[in-house]
Image 1 (cartoon, rainbow, N blue to C red):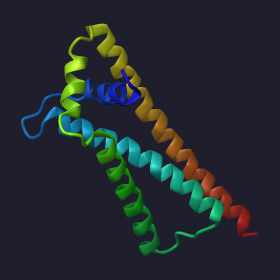
Image 2: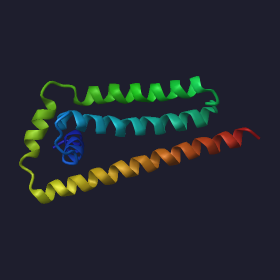
Image 3: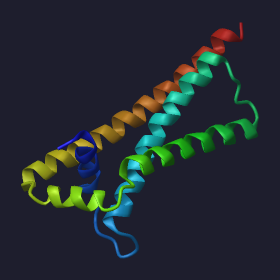
Length: 134
């Protein structure tokens, strides 16, 4: 199995059934959120190194919109092939319960590690701003 398939299954096993949306759509939302956090971290570093100030609401909104747009494009590129997520789910049906739990724990851990990385990259951006203000 490729890394993309394992990543999809990590978050697919975390999602519970719901009457309002499918597990596949909820899984793609989680994956897009994770990719959004990673792209925001990357943009935090770029903004900090280039000393671009986000002191107006318009700049901050453009920064957020750019991050969300990039994450959406990447998610669509990786998982938009017709039937690809269904094929991944069929491969995941053969996993034992213990393997599913391991993938679920890795999914939870990766989500929190990526969130922490995003937090520290925002802190690094503000630190770089403070160095350039002197």
